[in-house]
Length: 397
Image (cartoon, rainbow, N blue to C red):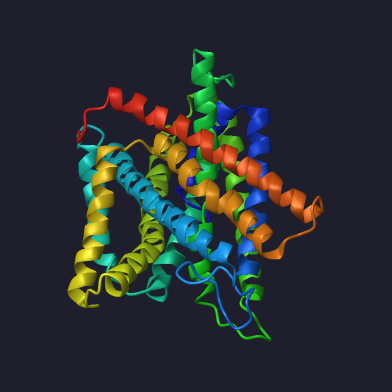
């Protein structure tokens, strides 16, 4: 759950402001925990069967169409979007390390993204989730470590003398668009639902001991850790730097040098593991389609070509648009708001049919309305941010 998106939360706060920012952080924590509980519950809603995105969403015609035409493409966009952002994050963290260690020698951002991508041309050929468990464990430890460094180093640096908490945009239009982008940044930080089904599918399950028991315990622990990481980083980072904070809090921090270098290296290790975590379902989906629908032979050559092409494609997009904040705002709203905020609620209403105006019915509809607004509005802000940055950016520089 704890991903590189946590590093953008102080920046999101600078566009949201204290009141709206705190409310949105807390609401997002509660809503995404609720929808994650729904996904865990619905995973085995048909006795003896598990829901996965390739087969069934219960024994319902509506569910089958929803799974085939909405859930599958939406999750694919999520996973590809995360991997593009992680390419940018890994490359820029390597660049930050280089600028701190060798401050007088400049190397293109594109080269650092390529260096980061080179690792994935090897790791992409690991066969399944269990084979990357060691990488995932290292990534989890690293994410907790750099989150802690981010807020403790901010405390160490102290409140800046020129700190301001007002909106930075000079026009009302700019303020509104920045606010929308920030909503997407928050949505991206709470992303993680799109790999829940794959993770739960690896847990042993019997009618007496269904997988939802241990899965839910894992979710609760994860969300406690999320709160301990996200809220200090977001609130302390914004308090110390105000609206001058960078879209990655670690970029705003310079000293102590050794600690900031270590934090950025932890980010690199983390996004290496997280990239693979999100890439595995994409590999599985592409290879399944090629073998079952297009009748390719399931050979090592096919796997080699598909996985290398995917890594190369995400690297190319990251090199072309290395805008961390804008990408987070765009993908956070467009790709993650549905799977994280409201698609589980639509499934719940369609399958369990709670009584109208009951607590469950009202809660789900509130989540759906808020999620739809988020999905519609935040990509607009993120896309505007990307366009503005692209105006002054020399591609492949």
